[in-house]
Length: 89
Image 1 (tube, helix red, strand yellow):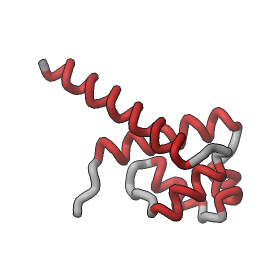
Image 2 (image 1 turned 180 degrees about the vertical axis):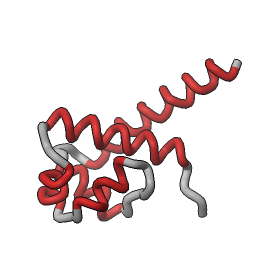
Image 3 (image 1 turned 90 degrees about the vertical axis):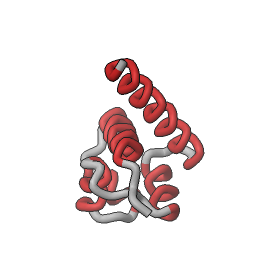
């Protein structure tokens, strides 16, 4: 199954925004999540999507519940799709 590029971009933007808000570098977030910095970079560039395990670890590293991270990404995605629809009309 092919990844949804808009969904990957929404996740990338949300992770980056939350990481900045927490004052973390990619390396610091990766350490907190038990991941490699290059994986965080790929997520933030929308080049890769996380597994469910990685999503849970990422949420933990961002000090949030996984459901809250998913909800924030869903909200961002809906706003981006609405903006795209408005500009196409």
